[in-house]
Length: 283
Image (tube, rainbow, N blue to C red; front, side, top):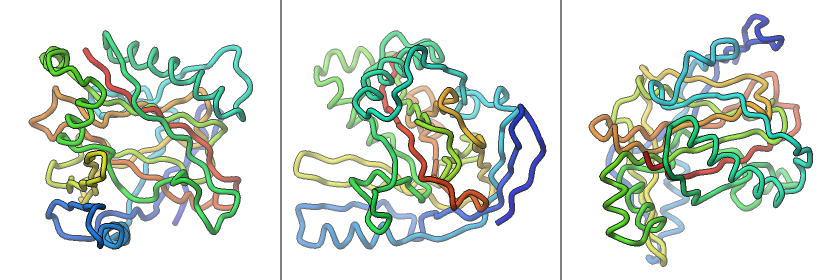
């Protein structure tokens, strides 16, 4: 794994040659039913069906304005959080950044309304041998929703059928706002340019739970995939990316593949800390 680059924006630009963990199974949809005795076993088996593939991840520092949510499916923006300096208090971070992120998404997309439905703070457990609460960076190429999964989630977020149909008559997106809680060195997040993907790359991965089901996806390797990240990403440089767009259903719904990856020169740095906030945006 090799890091190369030039000095840009006062920070050293670093393109990375590394490997990502793609889906290593068949291209058939996967259904894991946790009500069945073998549900947990099948889930563990599926999680281990990975295939490493070499990829080149472009650092867009110095050129990030060329990549927009509408054209590529992702966008890095400058967004300072004024009068806030306690980034160690988890509840304060959540209470501050959720409304801030909703405001940011409305500004970028022109959405009339946003509904946050999930958030997660990513970090490593204090015991490195055991990951706590699934909060470690996800080192596998995936998407958070399929089209079916997104529409299912909308039923939960907007339970009134009449209201839901009204919203679906316009454009509906699921947006993920991913923000560092401190400068990211170790395990940065890479995103795949939506223009380089094929709908056949997306393998539905449905989890059937007692309270219902949700559907994310595994992603098959495609040599045409173009990967990007922002080196030394700061707190005021959130990444905004799509996980569903009803305006792009013919193209697969714009559920953007993404993955944490190992930065070869940053493995000894402190664990990454970040927050991801997921919301519906109604245009």
